[in-house]
Length: 280
Image (cartoon, rainbow, N blue to C red):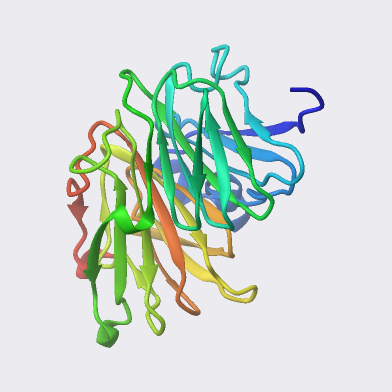
């Protein structure tokens, strides 16, 4: 394919909790906040040394966008030793994987297994969110419509956390090597997510906040339970969350977020709860 738009790749190094305690707001944002994910006609990818997660965005316009390998991966093709989940947060679009083409409506996700072949994105109006992690085993590429995801309704209006969790790639659903991916939608009038907080030192996590008005913001809480920090997050910005950090937040209005984990296991329930009285 000729004249392909460039794919921009940024690398983020892992940050330990002792270093994070001394970081100011600008340093925290530089290390953990991922913005400018969605640029028309391009793929923007951030490669993190947190369990070697890669997160990115693809916004096709006229020509298909191809997910290419890059030097850090050390492989000829992007999918040679990795798996990925593609989520469409925009209008209808298509993802071509090898010789197969998949149509994704808004809210759908596509799991792509190791060695699946070249991946490309098409569809003016589609906005594809990309999450990828190393894979040691090959699993079947599978399209998961949002109505097929496992839905769990939690919270209440009285505690401002009424929400629906949609599990797409998990141990009891579509199989993967290490990716666990889902989406949480907060009901109107609810703003809190993942509180009481938890950590899971066995897995790193990435959050993508979206479905927000231009002026809506989420106060994302991170850091050790005894040394919390916060970041102000706008629409279609993502957060990288180390295993030692809490990952919670509250918004100025309701919002939606995609959560994706990779690490030692794929047990969604394997978390270390943090009691409210232990937060500082």
